[in-house]
Image (tube, rainbow, N blue to C red; front, side, top):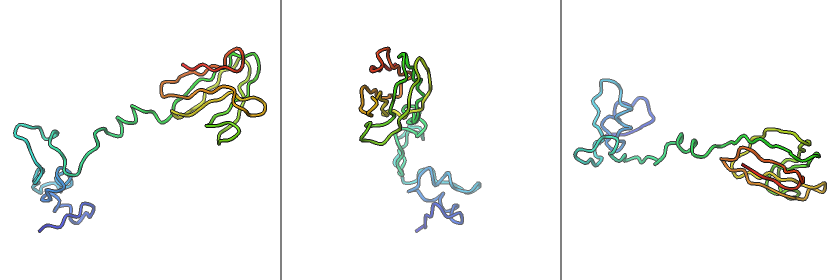
Length: 154
């Protein structure tokens, strides 16, 4: 019986014969040590090694694919088409939730980083929400419209 210690450098050579570790054991074997390719792992005649299931288990998507599909941060242009300075709130619930209050000057453009799902609000002087928009991973611009209490996103 072989002892398989995947993280102990002294035993790396023993990993070549550990069929339960599949390709990982073969990959960790030292150069010149014969490796048993997926010993103990089921194989299908004619199947490529990439199609052979890994006994350790592998995710269906790589982390890079998931990150590309759902960005962690979205840069959004906030355009104030209103003729006056507007009080805004970045967060879940103005007045009752955590977030940040700020202002958008009249006829101005600014950039802000959001996470998909974040909310952007127009608030009144008492910090009550007047209008909100949820930022999606496809959102590129939020516009405070001419009436100063409406939002549009694209």
